[in-house]
Length: 82
Length: 136
Image 1 (cartoon, rainbow over the protein chains, first blue to last red):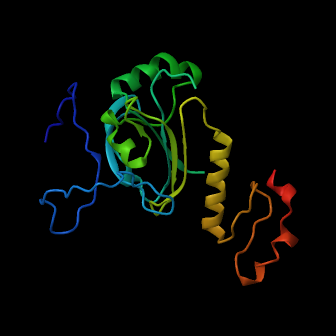
Image 2 (cartoon, chains in turn green, blue; image 1 turned 45 degrees about the vertical axis):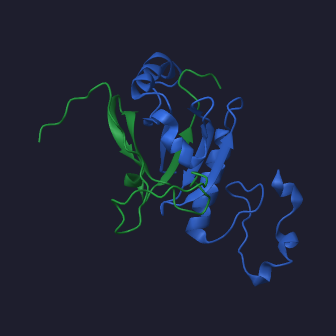
Image 3 (cartoon, rainbow over the protein chains, first blue to last red; image 1 turned 135 degrees about the vertical axis):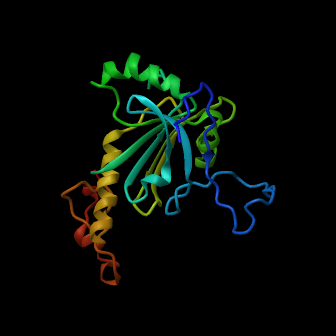
């Protein structure tokens, strides 16, 4: 299969949320709870995002790096100064 | 230490590219050696608890994940204060030591300093092994 060319807009998957088995097509129940899933001692929330990597563009899926030590650093923005 | 590093902001991958080429490569020869991810809309930042909806950006947050894919440490700060890289490195070494040996690291631990072996024998006896000045 030929590789698709890189367009300007490319959807990334974002968070990869686990759904209960057998309910993958069911509507997600609305829950009035915090979206935050990151807790120490608990599994890291998985995601796949588009990235600038090795001088080019590609997608990075966090769980592809399972088995390694990983550090992820969020920061407020490119060209900021702290 | 064998650690994969990912930087994430709400900027696009195009912005990341220009930042790398125009500025970061002038700070670090060849540019920063880790992928720069685009969390447009802050969807991933939201589940990690670092997305500031009013500003529309992911604030400064750092997460250490072990080989079993569990989060071991996190640090989240408002943007005005930068990180301490040496503290991150210390935490990585400490968690790697714990994983390799089963020992635990008391306050102020640095590589080479005394560790503790948890167990009933240690209860009430930490004072024999660990002194408060070791916290600094």
